[in-house]
Image 1 (cartoon, helix red, strand yellow):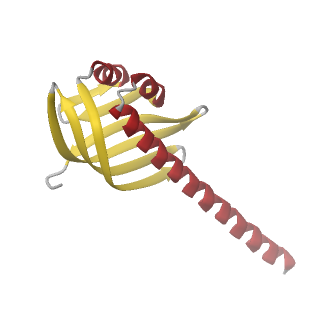
Image 2: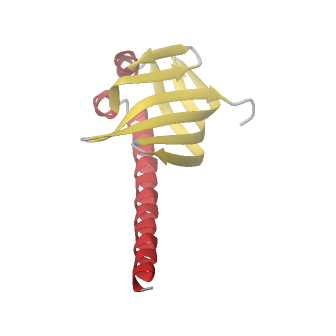
Length: 145
């Protein structure tokens, strides 16, 4: 009987630790995403280049491309992500992958023209030995704000 009680206690303890770790990792991803939006607003291409995985992909209304082109577009000002107003955020973690969904209103300058669009943004992060890396950033324009 003591073994059963001890086993149940141990199982409950391990579940609590797992839930606490998952909650902590989710918060870490949310903060990383907020920081990423700030780096985009600041056009800090060097910090973004460190965050973006070498194999990362970016999906925009105008097409899709990889890390090098995204960093160059930000560096040159081809797209300036001026401000992302975040309305909702959720994170799911599956093994070493975090999927973050943001519903935002994005103010950006594209080709010298300021535009404001409502988006559902999907961000995929992969946990690597040196921390979380952004693997994908995809914008889906919403029909309503």
